[in-house]
Amino acid sequence: MAVNSGFVLGVDLDGVCADYNGGFREVVAADRGVDPDSLAMPTSWGFESWGLDDTEYLRLHKLAVTEKRLLRHLPTIEGCADALWRLSDLGAWIRIITHRLYTNWGHAAAVSDTVAWLDEHRIPYRDICFLGAKPQVEADAYIDDAPHNITALREAGNSVIIFDQPYNRGLDGLRAHTWAEVEELVADLAARKGAIQPQLPGIDAGSDRLDRRRGTG
Image (cartoon, rainbow, N blue to C red; front, side, top):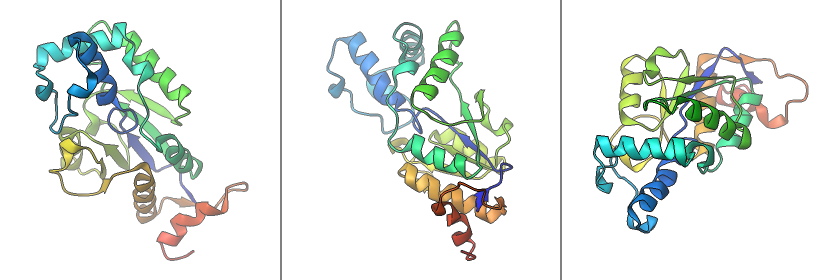
């Protein structure tokens, strides 16, 4: 059986599909002339632990996006593409939702490099939204790492899977430590919604796992 295309999965990028913090650390270290390993990965939201206030963060982020083309070269988070392909093959509508347009004069680079990165890493998606107010986007479930986004989405009545990061471990609820766990949780949510359609020819036998969650497989 397959997920009906009426099931929309809202997927965040940075901290979920792309290792933004790891890539940004390289830019900050180069700007300061220090070893990247000397900058411990943040355990709280933001980069205060690296000595960056809002002004300095925006300066370095703009440098990263417009000059270093960071968004074109970010490492992927392991398992992301394969899990999303399996979910897409089952019929889930993958909607990328990312807040990457929050600095002036870098929009063209941010958009073009985001799309190029998605294509290069073979990450499937049906549409893409660049915005910060994620509750405004209609989806049946979301996967996000940012505590403020998770809270806002839940307050609006949405199902949210927390992609585990050190800075979001104070939040309760559905949590995935890997993309294999994301896949399992999304399958469960789709099955509970009844977003099931008959299996199409050519779909591999493993795709009946949604039926098994309903106890019919």
